[in-house]
Amino acid sequence: MTAPRLTTPRRRRPSGALGALAATVVLAGCGMLRGSAEDPTSGPAGGTLHEQGTTEVEIAVGETAQISLGEGSQGVGDAWGVISQTEESVASADVVLGEDVYGTGGGQDAPGASMPYAVELTGIETGTMTVRVLYCTRAEIAEDCDQSKGTLDPPVDPVEITVTVR
Image 1 (cartoon, rainbow, N blue to C red):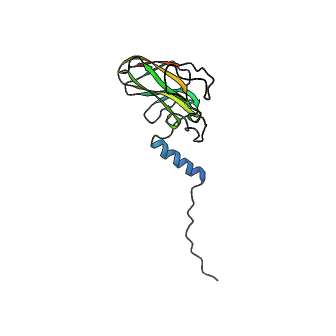
Image 2: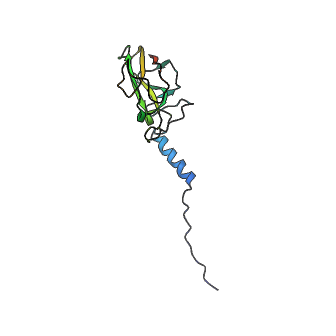
Image 3: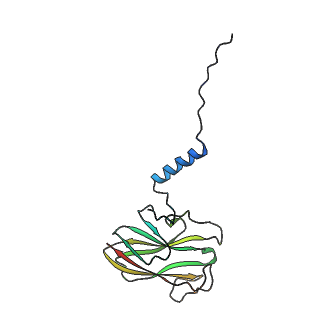
């Protein structure tokens, strides 16, 4: 008769699915996960992504919201920029792109690849303002900029958004 062999239980390694779940939990806890553009979700600063074509938004003081401008490519010269604001003291307005757009994975990093663009608005003080955003190609953002190239069909209409901060 042989003596019984003592073995140590094998430790199981987490499967790929468990590893992905763990990474999701960690990223969500750090505020690094964002939802899809179809389902407006909170971003890292509590912001929301609104669909392209939104012309009015209401936010609280300190709240951030984004309005999608669709996709474009910096590699071919696409650029969006804030051309004017009626009351700069009411909210800040900037154009963000790639991974800074809520609810997106960012976009590709290859030359000419498309990436998402959005207008980001953050409430500063109670009031109402209008922000005007313009699309230009291979030129600085200016009222009379060139819109004859790029990935969007020219001319691209300016985007005007009425922002009410409560």
